[in-house]
Image (cartoon, rainbow, N blue to C red; front, side, top):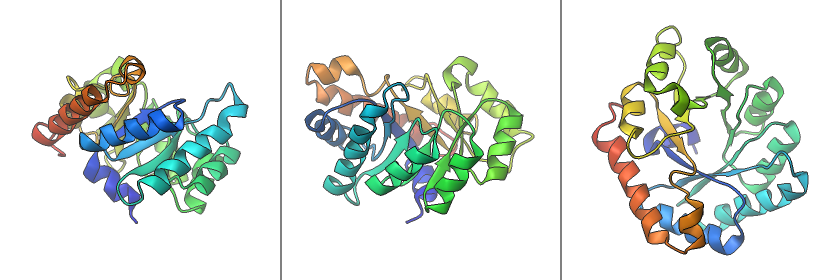
Length: 219
């Protein structure tokens, strides 16, 4: 399975934090119904005791939605977490930073590497370490123009936008040259989840899919 190719084709990754099994499965179905099939389950760096829950969530998606949803791990900052995610069935590793050991272990285990970078120096170093796609974070603070600017000298690298991405600016990031988008709270809305309004999450997912399909130059 070429998960990097799939990422570039599907373009959208939903970012999920701290959900129990029942809500996670309902959310996964809602996202899938809206056309989003890539889900990142994040690690909580402040609470190592929850890492087993993260692994359990990744495994649940990998088993319940095999071939339909492509699970990955997010906020991965240590080699230990890379191994935990791999054993659980993660297909890609997403980080908020550039850590050479994390990137190399990810590639060694056959997963795709999407580390977070902000400056050209960080992005270039991530590429040298073997990263597949560079996550520009926080993209929403910098706006799409930054993606376009950083791509000019680093045209050999692929970038995704994460942080502050929503259905209103998704196409702008795609037009700026991003190959994919990571969407968190603007899509995986805690209030909607708590209220059981998964149909609204499906509608938001569909809007995002339409935004990158209709307006993004890479869609």
